Length: 240
Ligand SMILES: [Zn+2]
Image 1 (cartoon, protein in one colour):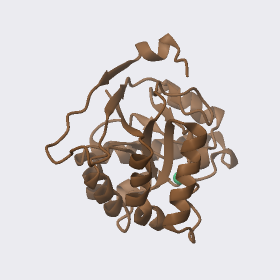
Image 2: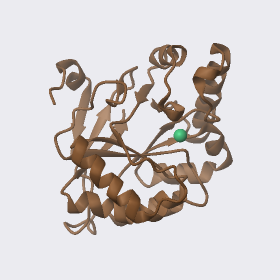
Image 3: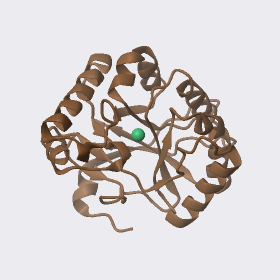
């Protein structure tokens, strides 16, 4: 996919150093894309694509941190030396500050995903902005800095929040592909097949998953194996 020069100019790309135990038998993290803190938006669900090569994917996890399932997700990622981006709910950050910090301490990046996960379009402009402010405040309290990224609940964008995020230099983190991992009955085999099918269709991109979802947390080792077996490379998204 052709990448506009403007997007390339806005980024610095570095190669991630691997720990000694992250050998070729592991999935690993191939490289890191470091985005500027600016009001950009990525993810072909609604916006332009990140400058990824064919076969490169970004792992993202929404709705955490969850005391029950986020530790399982962190363990599975650590075992494969894979770095991801976690889009956290403000109220969950406030409830689980140590776990939120543990995610970032493990080398992952974090942004916000609203404060209470509402359908934003059903709220007044004032209510939308209040939710955004609360989630930004929760992030800042726990991480000591402004969130670099925001993902809309249900990926339902609103003009009010798009404008506010742009003015605050917060990246809108949309997605390119998903595994629809919100059905409680889904088994590891179903999620793995869905990931495989989505990868075949998209070829690269930002993958949406949910670290607050039990079936996803349980399936993650198998999902990472799908990526490795199909030869996909992990790109870690981070911000300056
Ligand atoms: Zn969500």
